[in-house]
Image (cartoon, rainbow, N blue to C red; front, side, top):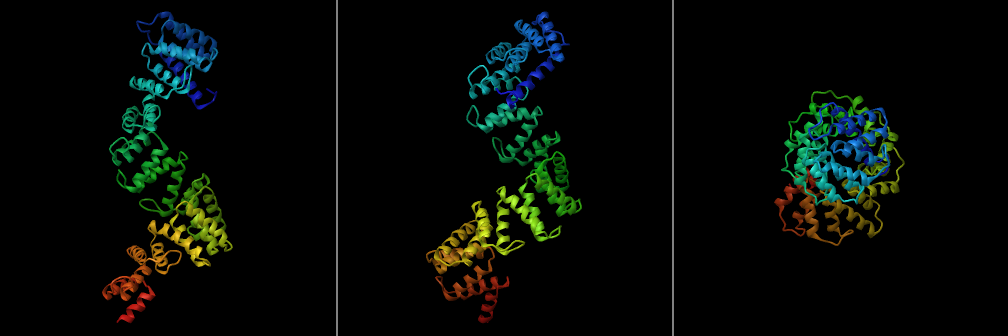
Length: 477
């Protein structure tokens, strides 16, 4: 094991913890089975450790271990494992852990598990490691229940088993393990290994939040904000976000920023506070905050309009893979908002957003192909992206896809498909689609002619101000 690796630091911390516990226990009377000399040697070892004399620590601890003191046996194993006061030896470390195991010493179970996990004095074996961790957890040792739960949760050393993970996670959570409480919250939220319950999720998140866990404070804040598993109370959400933000939890800065900008509930709207929080979140790398700031600079909302600042934040967010930022950049270049109008740049950014499944980018890319169409291939590309947006539920994309089918542009003519997409768009209140259906029923275009239906569709379109529908209605009077 490499020095200063996470695993090494964990072992070192356990060693210090073991010796600190020994110092505490040294004042207690020895059990009937423990020889007085072993007790004396162990006490002298802990005293030497407190002075920083590792060689004497090892020598005295080894004497106590040889006389059967289980604590000393584990401490001796730790010193061999870390090379403290003696040469490092994984095999000797494991041998002493097993001596303590023979006395059913709980920490020894865990240390043998670590030996198999990291290959200390033996081959690596996740299956063996989990077996020993389970024994440690059954004996109530430390955070072993959380370790076992995590391995069941991830399928390490055994097939993934969320039900067993939940059982061990609850054991750890009841002992106050904040990681287990937080994970249980997530499991109840998703119904993984337990019966899904937002109320139970909130209960465990609250226990972790009460221990100061920033992520749980943030998550519970969201639950209060939207009324998920708890009563809806934006003020409680704000309080929890502030607690998380005080621990530099970036997502909480973003939520606070948006809440102060909106100013709902019992707190007053404060653009100054809101923008400050968004800036902190954006500078920390939160792309949502970057995009929110960029939108405001672009529109001059709560700040002076500043195209350069909008461009900066959109570009930073887009460079981190944010689809909304890529779409916004594409539209800036397409319209020439604060930048020279540049169709090639617009295409570049829209295509990046499209590749991430951004529906509005798909629609606008299709429109761009239509507007600049000079070859049949341009209509084919337009049809491709109208279809993607239409299938995602975009009403105008549905109408345009129907129009392409009706006019055989980029797609083979199909009245059935045209009418299908017109109806889909019309059901989402697209006036263009409603007008087109009116025309179809008035003229009998691949449907039975029906003036009642025609008038009905015209009236729907006209109610939205569609000029063609208004004209048709005037003609029909």
